[in-house]
Structures are given as C-alpha cells and as structure tokens.
Length: 201
Image 1 (cartoon, rainbow, N blue to C red):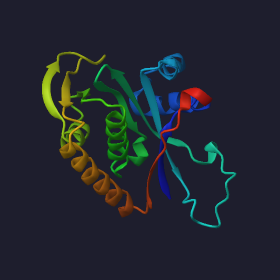
Image 2: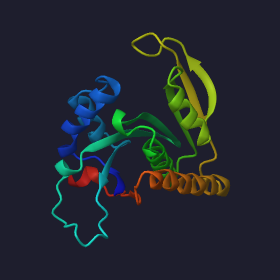
Image 3: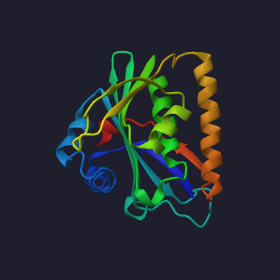
C-alpha cells in the first residue's frame, strides 16, 4: 500500500465534495471546489491509498474508484506567503500519519513555489490538529474570536524562513517521521506528484 498525494482534477471534485461532507460537514460546495481549481493561485491536493506499483500482481488499469479519496487539502499563494486553507483526512483514517503526510506535502510545495512563510487558521478545540501543526514548526500568531459558524475561535498559526537550509533539514526530518508512521500500519511509502492538474483537467 502506497500513500499518493497529487493535485485534484475536475473529475475528482464530486468525490472531494463527498469527503468534505464527512470531514467538515459540508464546508465547500462543488462550485467552491471548482473555483479553487480554476484559481491560478490555488492548489487542491488529494490523498489516495494505492497498491504498491512495484508489486508484479498489480496492473496499471486500476481506476480512481478502486482507490477512494481519503484526504484533501488546499494551498493559496499570496505573494511570498503560502496560506493553508484546508486540510482533512477521512475519519476512519485519522491517527495514521496521513494528515502529517498532507501537511509535509503542502510545506514542500510552498517551498518549491518560493514562499517564505506559511500561515493557517485552526479551531482552538481541535487539539489533534493544533498538536500536528506545532509538531511541524508552526507557532501561534494570534486568535480570531468566533471565527467558525458554531462560534468557536480560531488560532492563527505561522512559520517563516521556508527558504532556509534549516527549514529544508526540518522538512526532511518530518518526511522521514511521516514515512515511519505510515509504515507502522503497513503503508510502504509516500509518493508526491506535482503535475500541472490545471492544464490537463
């Protein structure tokens, strides 16, 4: 089993909306996802679990339907800042390192796109997410009162110096830790694909 992260395409959006409903209770509509896909400054990433292609018993004709979408995330680029607007894993697959896999992929992408810093908002009540973000170097910059529809507050988190050698070293450590977590439940590795989904969707 291999965790594969790649940009979403138009044909993935209905599945993304269904997953969004399970994770967030219906945060973005199909139109909302399409707008993100069309926006040049936005990247939607999806995570699927696929059989290891190195296994000779596995054929190339596997369809997306046999590998359902279990993770989604979105990154905005605003000048030299990467803003993580969404990150979620299917409830049945949480606690397996897949959220960390998506987050390290977003930070890798942010660095590749020459961002100097990354920011996000997270529900103060979501202790697991806050713990993950802080594990991967995010610091608290402030708080937005009553940010969510249910009236709960959001923490504003950030980290800078994404282009430094020190950050690259940290990213490599987090990637190794992610692969170790994935291996604990039988996932053989993490594959990140950075193809231009907007061009061939």
